[in-house]
Image (cartoon, rainbow, N blue to C red; front, top):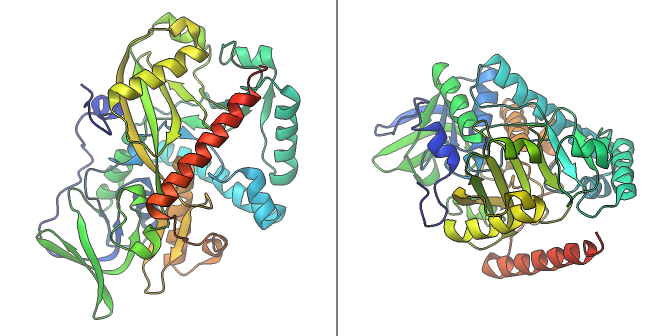
Length: 431
């Protein structure tokens, strides 16, 4: 049963059941080489990359349950790119560096797939891929975008004309679409729990229900204070996302927590295949797009909207129900059995915050929008830097932690979102 208060209980939580990864509370003092604060995918992926490199005594410390934040509550899309648009990335750092950095995200998608295969991760991975649909019925613009991505970034997207697009997703709302080779979708909460299990089986520590109250330098090492225990660590990595902004305000004040919403339908039977002849994940080319994908038990997971507001599950159902019916009129009135929200963390520049503070503390934050691949990339980049190779980490220096503006910044962000949504509405009037 969905909790009727923000953020709501997710379908993922009910489907996966209790966490059986082996994560434990922490109630005794401990010494580790690397302590990672934050048990979302950024933290767990950093630990996995360190263990893969042979680093001993790694610990992940999570205030709640592993994957309880955005990493276990999202749409489950695994595809390339950053939250910053591809053209903007190339404009800011030049096409050569942008091609290289975008390529890292494509390699990260492949790395997620490799780990699922090699480590036997049970996370309902679906290889049908991800399709970007044309909300505005402008095929020339979509084809030109695909050609530009190939030229500027070496990023291949397959054009689907309206007939071929309808073989994947059928809606009068769309024109054609673009299919991203190599992309896929999965159960994000199962995935992160399975990674935690893999870590524990290899001797790493994963502690949950263990909120860190402070991080201080003491006698040349880090001292982390928890309720009833302390952890001493040679290195500390902060990966708390949008769910904590107290431990290191110097970097965490650069985060803007932005809400998105998801609902899951009742089982749809044949109606699901009528809408999605292929089990692809779908999103469209508006700023505040819909995103959705089929689930193994015949349900449709539907997400969308971008806001600074925390809404009740009942309000989310109403919003998602209207959006769903606009795309698939045949599903008008379908029962949305569960609904929830979550906080994505963004920086003002829309790129991840990766680096090391002057006092030596490492951080990997701000993965809103494309988190399933970029968090895994961040884990690899941070593991490399912790092992002495900072070459890829230096590529993220153009995007430092800049204050996000606090409450005033949130109001500005909401105003920008409303303006962009209004622009999309105006542009779609003729379609």
